[in-house]
Image (cartoon, rainbow, N blue to C red; front, side, top):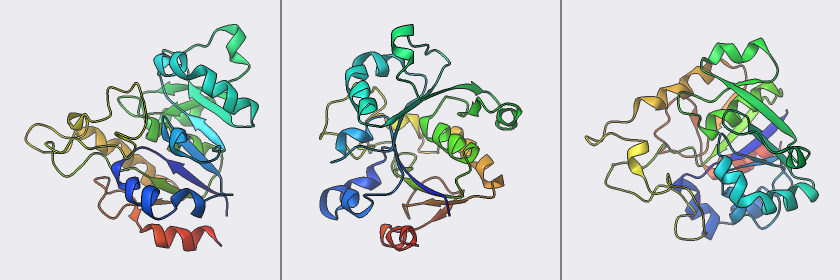
Length: 222
């Protein structure tokens, strides 16, 4: 079994992170940090990933370079992001995004990131390209239960960040509380032969089997 734990930013992580020793429990596993998740970890992830955010790279490049020097892979995609020559050596992999899910299979350097270049979709695409057959998705919530609830990310109020999306519930829901149609971009991954677990029983992403953290801890021991 080739497994990976992908740590996104959804609020559902917070309780496990603060009170139940999340990162102690998954230490030693292959862990991919998306966007700011690495800032909450007591050790380095296997890989740090972000998409289409030159601002992210510009602000945090010193932290990213430090992680690289410690053995962390830096993986991103190049639409809107082309590192200067002196920085390119730090980028382990730099993919090119495509607009349609099936187009990514035309070339090993192509990835699908959804209609709005989401890092969660990027990580899913890369994991499948690299032959992972068991994926554990942490913080893949797709917002909260209502647009009025703006507490969207687990590290909200705990770390410094430059994201305008943190706390913006309208990314995930319309003003009438209907889920944004972009959530359907996750449905394509149901076609994969890989087993994809969403570690959040209340996630608004309905396309993968939902499990508890306790169940994940059991499965990663195998």
